[in-house]
Length: 448
Image 1 (spheres, rainbow, N blue to C red):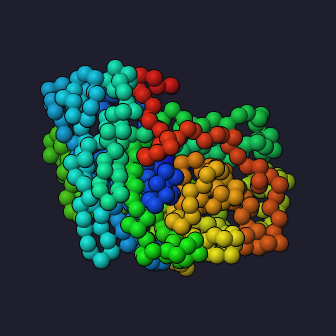
Image 2: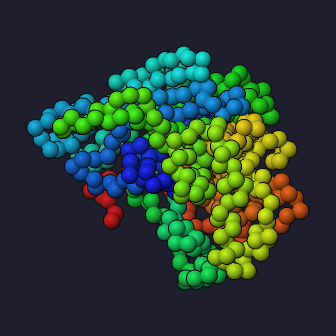
Image 3: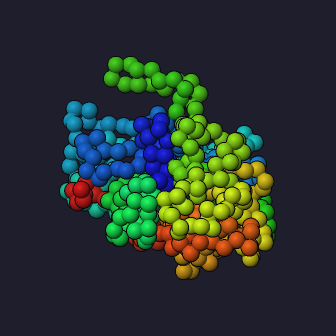
């Protein structure tokens, strides 16, 4: 959660496990969109001697659909490889790393970025791009912020890229949510009540590996949108990881063979995590978004919406009586919001139901971002794309509890408790410029 260990098989393959996806109009460069795909969840900072890294046998991709059929029109492909400078030491670094080219930086990762389009064009935007080391500590990586900044690469034509370790920007009280939805602030009303206690951000001191890409809006749209209501302004975004179909073990190394097969995907936060049933989670990870009509019933009748009235007797009476298909959740998660539902806004990508993060690129960045996004009156926030500040757990839990159902059924009154659901957490601090996610937590300073 958002997509950390969301399915049985991918939880055993963290290098290919997508954790979060962000897409937003860049606040400091509003003619561009920033796309961030995070992988390798729940990284403890003090992970030596073999620190975390991208998979050299994994193909990472960010896909954009801009023609309404939930198929990729533009794909950014990332391929990594690893070089060891001194194979006769067990050390990740043999002294302080003060630049990406230091001889003391012993295990390095490089990558290539390729832009592919649906019509078959393929353009290498950059190659031999260096990732920064992990944040080991003040002796090994003494000026980490500067070191990471040097790993932001200019790809030309207004494009920038960064791939490396970052602090996990997702904030959630995992312990309370997965303890039979022991939701704050009314744990005392649970079927098995507990005493009130403040929320705990279980990811607060953990890291991830981020692929961050900033590109001109024109790179992503099918034509130039005339404004917010223009259908060309709305795009769908998702990320995938793929492995080759066969793996051969050669003594001390493995080698992939055959075509790449998708093993992980992510669009909206929490969909596979909280809506897709256990028996179909791995299947969902292998499928393409345009096939998501096969999973439509899980969105129309979410299991958690049925559980809340049971777990909290008498607290959600209106939700208990809501048996209709949840057209509100279908719009938020699978089609985008058509015009007329939220005044002056739409991010509708067409009738094809598909789990994609939908972004209206004509909505300017907010001068005062609200963590509740559109629900909080901020049209630049989730579910219009997703920014790191957006409190997607609260937004989606409240939506499932019925807060958004009046958008499609004005006579419905949400339960009072539905608007109170929260895990009680404040957003972490994020950078004001690319790649926006904060520097990773250092191993020496790691908090147990």
